[in-house]
Length: 264
Ligand code: AVW
Image (cartoon, rainbow, N blue to C red; front, top):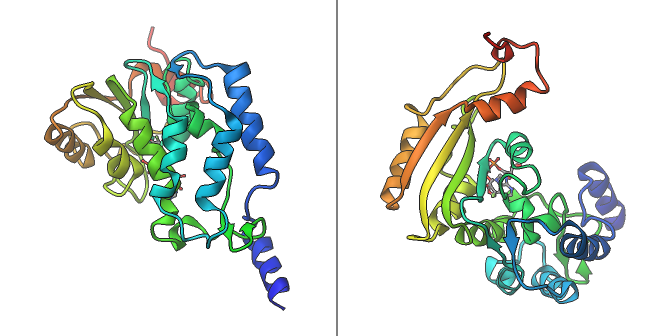
């Protein structure tokens, strides 16, 4: 009965550890270093087998919610890289446009362009008493600390590697959440981990969805508390509403919209 119940839960939720996770991890890890070789990231060559051992040791053979960020610390420090000056890009509520703009690390470097983010992007994993659970992993909000153990550490590690000016892309049309939310990864793990005086300025790009209401602008709402929090950390900031560069990119998919009509 328990087996059938678990199978049903897995079917409904559809979310055990991603099958072939070891092969995906190792394949991505070697491909990143030997084929992709992103230009704005630097480190010595990492042994992917060693990284896999450190990663799997952190979460396997224990309950899915029994993992803390400390257990991922050896993996994070072993996999960490240097990010070229002025290239680090953060995002909140803007996954798609930020990654389009970053262009796989060519224009900017997001967490998902670093070795750590690249290896496990869109992969699910969790442990159980027998090792790895391929049937069912609870959603992140059902585990208190374990829910953010990996991506929280990865975000802090990423932010602590940023140098020079950093860029954050936010959504001023976000429904149900402010553009800058105090419980975002950016607010909780990234802003506090920026290293001063190596980081000098935060450039905020506030993007509004085409054809959606402009709920917040650089000079109101949560953008003011972001600029306060940045100043309180001893950093300068700039904020631009709908920079042309980003709008032009969005207009590729929406050329007929009002925002995309060029004035000659
Ligand atoms: P987001 P964030 N545990 O777009 O600043 C696991 O709001 O938060 O931006 N997943 C979660 C949690 C949680 N506690 N909260 C939200 N999510 C999911 C790393 C949510 O469903 C990068 F470097 C959404 O798909 C960015 O600068 C995703 O996490 C920054 O942190 C992102 O939430 C993005 O995180």
